[in-house]
Image 1: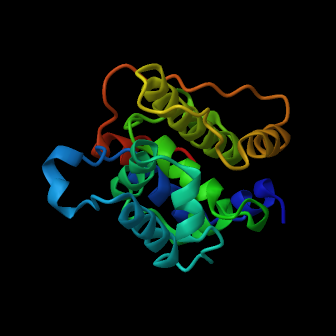
Image 2 (image 1 turned 45 degrees about the horizontal axis):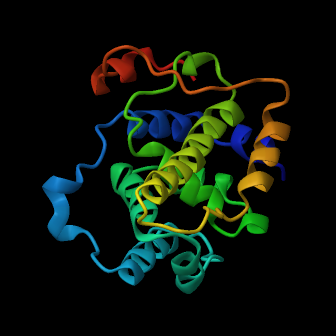
Image 3 (image 1 turned 120 degrees about the vertical axis):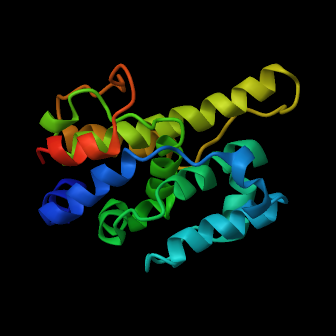
Length: 200
């Protein structure tokens, strides 16, 4: 099934739970530093565990993840997963694509952290547009984290995010001519308010 077909087949209750979860305040690393892995390899283990615990095949093994990202960009993925502990497993399974390992889920999580406001006009988006917004944000954030540190001389090589261009092309195909850009609503979206205004 295509990404569009998998997302559109999700029950309305799953979509509602997804949007409510995404509107929660983001995970705050300074408040929970004791629960976070410190070593880079431990980060890779924790990220793989987030996938495994949701019943999704771990196709991107810990050693592959370890080699693919530097430590600071990798942190953004675990921060994203910790921001959405109750996200429906069925949603992440729909986002998963064997051809991309687990990178669709990883980039989605990276796009969650730092985006505690829902995309402007999300009520009128298709599910593919909604998901593409977060995945693109995640890819952009990981690239930004890498090149910010490269400019300071911390990293020397260019960023080489796995399946970056292929995933962007797949998202473009899924949303057609729609151009989705993240524009957050002014002010925070309240948890109770979202429950009342949810129109999916």
